[in-house]
Length: 106
Image 1 (cartoon, rainbow, N blue to C red):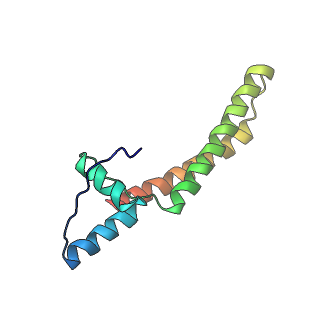
Image 2 (image 1 turned 180 degrees about the vertical axis):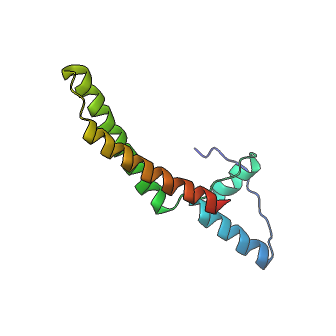
Image 3 (image 1 turned 120 degrees about the vertical axis):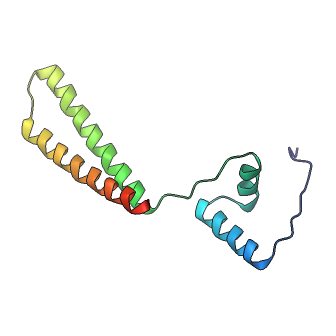
């Protein structure tokens, strides 16, 4: 059964409609969902670019590898400093990429 029983029609001029469509496409939401979120006081966010998901995946891999090093250290008392240093350097390079992107987006 339908949860929404009221329909609202809005007339927009060409500029308003163009901006509305641009804003909706940036979020990846439907027009209806976008409007509902605005009405409820929530400003929909833009979808992150594809690089964001790649960086997130890389950070996840690094985190998992560092966790494996910690597990190995706890069980064998052997610390692989070279492997840890490599992961740390990779982590620092990804953090620099993130920082550069944040600086450009301001």
